[in-house]
Image (cartoon, rainbow, N blue to C red; front, side, top):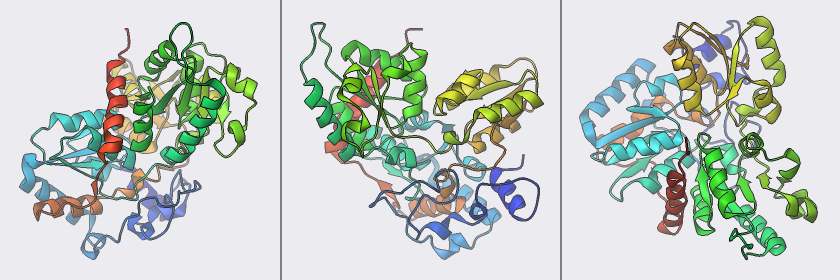
Length: 423
């Protein structure tokens, strides 16, 4: 299997194919001193002021060859043994996944870390909100490490605690806080896992809950049992696609733009809402289009199209199925006959699925190679750096969440865990 990173280097050298940015061929540390998410799908998104920045990676790691870095990681992990667990998100580059003890989505990995009770260090090869969640769920004596602090998430950054708190105040002015005759409060906050610890804490403090792309419908059912309507953030598409599939009319799901009064809505529209959607999105999944699906069907009659629910609604409607990263993987694994799959999610994962299941034809709907900008910031050089730091007794890039946030955030996460599907 040719990795996506190798493919990018080949395209930059003149091979066939195209990428969304020639800068993808550069090493990620070349962007550590530059504000922004870096090349890739989120390169056009605005990085909030005060976002974590990564200092310069030491020269010995920047100058080391891929073979040397691989060997140093293997040696450091062997030295550390059970004292460390390395977690790799589905969207991570193959050169890092090769060293992961567990691979999965953000919440699967946070749970996987808990299964390694003997580990004193959890190295999370993902993005910032994932490491925060692991820190919230970890023991006090476990250190959660993010190899590159610049690995954020533009979607998570589209909803910040100040904007959500201000929106909540506007909504409370309209609805008040008293429950109706059935005991349901006017509004329940629901945050996607892809959000900051502060927003998870906000939900915990305000009767709300966290959801994942796997259990969003179950969580919305939980919220509707307790509230007349839902404020869903930060991803509008997951909220809209999930609620629509549950029978909520699209016209009763107004968008909330935090830069506008009442989110850009009339008071009547807000009062009539069942789900108020935050103006946020994933730049990876925003790239997928109905035209791409049409081309796939024309080229491969009978193709099975599966997209992530973070894709825009017309794309989800045009696909055969929509589901989380774990759903996509399980769907391909369960296919008993050779099948052509066109997948709408991050290209590193799609490439890995194509190699893992060679009996099928698996390809990414988007023909342009454009990985997640922030997952791309994690490179074997950073992984070797933090692991060798642990060997020396030095904890580098530790993620900390204060109790004032972690305690209510844990409440919202525990509510999510208790909201199990009925079937």
